[in-house]
Image (cartoon, rainbow, N blue to C red; front, top):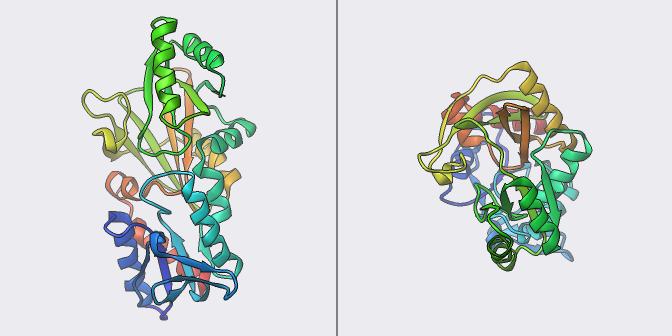
Length: 296
């Protein structure tokens, strides 16, 4: 164990990566601090962000593993509370202001598109007529909530006729998606890939192999992690995709298609388990070593 430090993990109690990372920080720094944002209180007058006996503004460092169990716009507010701790001078990995730009799928897409990163054909609209045109033009499309992970809430829609397709789109819209994010379904092999970066340096890649009968490769839908050795071209594409966001730790989702590689999204919280099980990388050692170097 190195010099005793108070480094917290913001995450989900019971979650594999949150618990494992809290254990790893305890081994390295001597304190085990796992913060559940469900129970945090910001007191602007006192200048504190408290979680039980801990004032986050007095810690030596904070690693943000998860801001909540499910993606939603509510996480934006939680990250603002963490930003208060960061503004008080505590090193936060990654800085909450940078994570904010990735929670909303549309924000991520706009940044990637503006930097010329190859993406699946995508249209975003609140207008039903334009939504119908998008599905008609794509033939087969994925309707994606602006806040979700592991394909939760996504709907696969095929153009049949206007009445049936309209009903499917309206059902998606009425389920809480007034801004409709519509992406052409891309034919990819049985796997896609995650490439993981620490402060812009590539540390490993892994594959997600699609489960039987699933249309996506997510672990939530039965996918499995597997080894993946990306080409230099793929690594550089992923590096370019994550660069505008400036995160300490990030994973880039990429698929190799007949038309060339495409990026689906950049993730602020993903990659821990994939890197561990798929690439055999000791991600806990990598992360705790990085934090130790930064806060010493």
